Every structure is written in C-alpha cells, then in structure tokens.
Picture 1: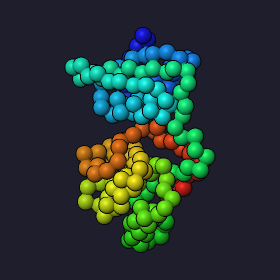
Picture 2: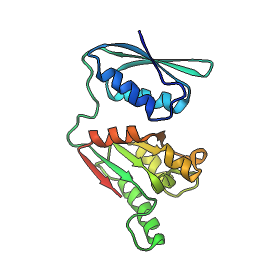
Picture 3: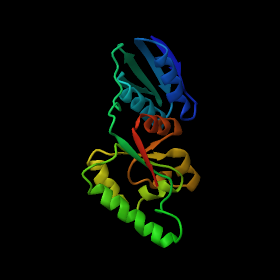
Length: 191
C-alpha cells in the first residue's frame, strides 16, 4: 500500500495531495498520514465525495487514513439541480450595516423555512461571523443543518478574525474544499 505522508502540511495541501494520487490511478489503496483533526476530516470528506472507502486509526497524534478506490467510484454531487449559497459577509447587501444585519438574519430564517434548500452554505471572510456563539443567525443555521444542508466555514477566515474557538455551528474547511463544492454545484448564489 502506498503512503501519502502529509504530516506537517497546512490545509488544503493534504487534500490536494490525496486527490492527485487517487486521480492518477484507476483503482488501488493508499494510507494518508496527517497530524491534525481538521486535515483528517477534510481528507475524509474528499473520500466521501469521491466514493472512496475509508477507515481511520489514530496512533500518538497521527491519523492513518486508509483509502481505497475500486474503479467504480461515483461522485456524490452529480445532481444537475443542486445549488449552494456562498456567504461572504455577515450582512445582506450594501448600504446601512444595521439594515444589512437585519436582512441577513431574515434571509437565513426564510431559507431555513424554504422547501428548496441548498446542498451547502459556504462561509468565507465576514460570512464566518454568522456561525459564531451568541449570533442570532445560529438558530436558523442549525435548522438548515438539521434539514441536511452542509455548513462549511473557512478556517483561514476564522483564524483571521480570531473566532475559531467560538464556532457554534458548521465545520471548519479550507479553500480547496470550497472550490470543489463550488465546481460541483449547478448554481451558486453569492451574498
């Protein structure tokens, strides 16, 4: 079994290295080595979205992720009618910030009550502030998550604003995963 050693690499490099390897083979197995929880979770998401079988063993802070491609992998996001919402701000529209905050809260509530839901909410830049402890938008985001919407928050953005430890909902992700989700969506709504 081949080893893809990604210890010490910052995200999204472990995901990129893993994807390159499995794109280059028709079928086979490999073990990916990572040294942090976020990299482990992102590699497992890649595996899931590409139909790879996976298992994980942790030894002394190192995650050994065994992946297998059987030659019949199907991508999950092949639905032609899926859409995602990219939230690049914690405000809806430009102009008055107080109004923008009210409109975003209202938008997320209305979206959570909608019959047609996005597959993903991607939060980047100031949009990550919507998923922080104490924000009024967390309740609507929780409703969306319970209805199957995957909520992904940019780890670099959370670090920039010093909010990583205050994340109330959603998963921390990287730009590579954000690009993959956007590329697999039939439509993107950017707010």
